[in-house]
Length: 413
Ligand SMILES: [Zn+2]
Image (cartoon, rainbow, N blue to C red; front, side):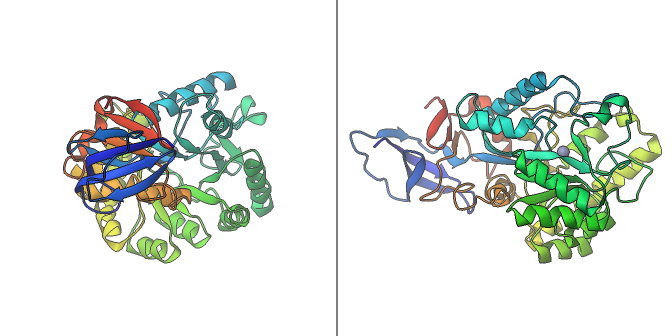
């Protein structure tokens, strides 16, 4: 049996503080042993002396749009920028990039028509193209005339791209079942506007019975529902209706936090996107100065609430709208430093968001997210200690190793 013995690791296991001088043995696709002793290697083992380099779990992005690429304000609906084959090539390229950046798993926050995510997942799992473990997303559910149904045009009659318009609880039930049947593993709802985009409308585009129907239908088949949800009142409605993951939550207050804690809801803030928007002084998204101020106020609220939520024990995950404007695919780890420097979260906590919590959101905490005996060997070897300087995770070109399921994706050891 092929074994890899990492000796002298500074182990960040995804749970606790760094453990120097740790030995980790990988056998085939799994972690066989984690020991604070310098375990002897067998002749047939590949022995790797890490000499204090950090060994840690592969990173997990909990908000990933495989097809986003240089998205700006576009005349055409999202997801129809190019024909389907071209979109798949973009998605495959972005998946490879995520893996090369040390993200060994990604959770879709919304796919496009033609089941791009589900098909990409299949191609990755079958070894056709390199990529992370991909939890495939559905199209983003909305209602006729809802938040994303603003660019009415002939093309939407046949193919709404990244959006799927349903009406009434029965419409949502059928829509959810169809997306699941076509390979989606997590359902996305566009439950509110907001999150960086100033808007005049404040009525929830999806009604509470529709959200509840979507959540019940997905749960019945063993899948989770996530909702783009920035507004306070919509957030409360979504959590009450059974949504498992709140994306963004910019308008969150302590009442929202209590409701989420009570329900066991995950939060994926994706707040770095808004920071980048606010830094873009060139009239971002066509907003007026007054609208920009409302976005800034929401941003500052989220900045204030995140440490409170973290302290209260809310499961928070990383991931953002990479592929949009100032947030290119490949810049994933900048977000980690942002949560440390601009939001005041300890690096070790942000590492947990990016490892253990992501695995929990995937429903695979028994196999992924931490370095522990019996788990899949999705691992990184990096210089320095990210629990002291999280910025080292941005330099993926300097990573010494990336392993997915015990196989080297990158090996410069
Ligand atoms: Zn998104």
